[in-house]
Length: 414
Image 1 (tube, rainbow, N blue to C red):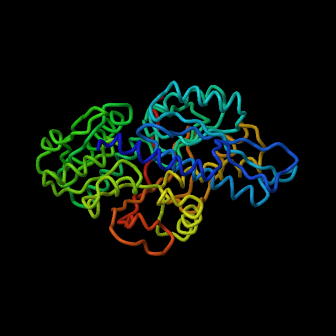
Image 2 (cartoon, rainbow, N blue to C red; image 1 turned 90 degrees about the vertical axis):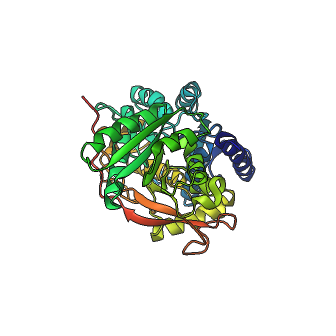
Image 3 (cartoon, one colour; image 1 turned 180 degrees about the horizontal axis):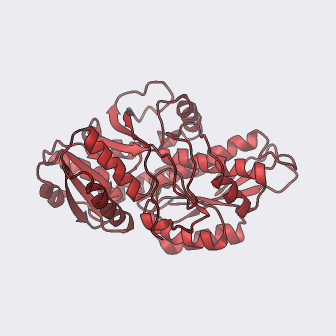
């Protein structure tokens, strides 16, 4: 089965279960403790169809969990008492910029949301950031790491999980140095994120002359990576973070060719890789993540998440970022009200400590994360350290190997 078809089948099943659980609605929020004031709408624009749907399903569920918990506690507290939150959701269809633009405009102009979050694809980030800056609506990126998304004049766009491509490249070089790796094969997808990562890695590699990088560029729809893998030769690490749609297949096909090098993935769901690559994934597939799975905060949140959404198997960092997005906006509303401009200003001057995150969230003036420290983990067969952190159908756990030193925030060119 191709990776595209696998993801679509998996996403349809998860979406069906999630829709049934939530009563078939795309607007989430409790009503049992309704305030007299109208609910505050928070927007989610994320992929619910297409290649990146497994990411978006997690984002939506994490955001919905935050809304549910806030509303059960009486809503967002403020001068006028508690106000409930409602989640308004739009599907950007993974890489369809027209759908993303339409969704952003519907959320902001018709639904009247105070913010938009959940962006995954880099083309979607490029399209919606311009709209957000023009409309002065806070926009929160979950992945979408293309360097060009942020400019020095950006004031309403915030990265929340995946750093910019330049910072991810820093992490890859750090990893190679730490593991004393001198030969690296890099798989790049020929689209915005892949090309941004390629140029960033080439820049980062200048400071690591003892490491040889062999870069292969494959089209986004590629499902046969065998020619590119053979071109790598005898490498000690395969980096597929430049080709998110193909990372599980890169792993599986590398194993079929007898390549023993571990594969560094593409910020994809652990559960997706565990299912699609099966036994070849365990002990060989690794990734950098914004979640700290060993912390009490993550464990407590993950248990609540899986009780609410057991069909999602595991609380991925996309779900954590969706949860964090709503909590950040709710805290801002509580302190400065519902003006999108006031919310953005509050976010810029505030540090947020979200349970389960690998670092406190704070930003440069242009919206890049300060002090980002992704955790590097390897997919490991077996039960997690505590019950309730995955489902019975997911016998795996990401074993953390090290935490990246703080990354230097990427500064866009003037």
